[in-house]
Amino acid sequence: MPTRVDFAFGAADRLLKACEVTQKQVEAGRRLVVFTRNAGRLRKFDRLLWQFEATAFVPHVMSDDPLANRTPVLLEGRAPSSELAREGAWLLNLDTDCPPGGEHFERILEIVSDHPEDKAAARQRWRTYQEIGFELRAHDISGR
Picture 1 (cartoon, helix red, strand yellow):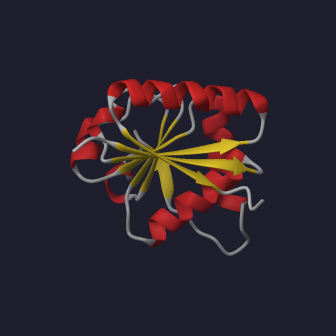
Picture 2 (cartoon, rainbow, N blue to C red):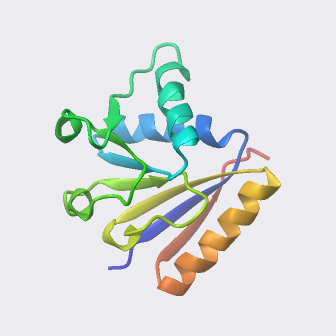
């Protein structure tokens, strides 16, 4: 069964929407790996998870943290572990490129803002995923 990639287009703010998506996945009992090679973006996402909603608590750690095996959300700046994929984790891609090893995951989540650079990078990822043979789905979350 090919990896399924869900693109959510039209987010007002990519990282804030990613926080909401992460929270929903945790509430659903799902393990999630959040990937980007951009260390600054990963740090910002880490901070946002603590403050995006006053009453929200989204347990998360860096993937090399001693508590990683007991935490539902792992923040990853390197190639995500295929072992996590075998354990059923989903991948939330916050990188501008397709994640390395994405084919090991059952599901990849992509959040795309209306920013022109973000949309251009997302179009390229879409084409790459399509060439690989992943199952692609698009969701308009702009509310328009």
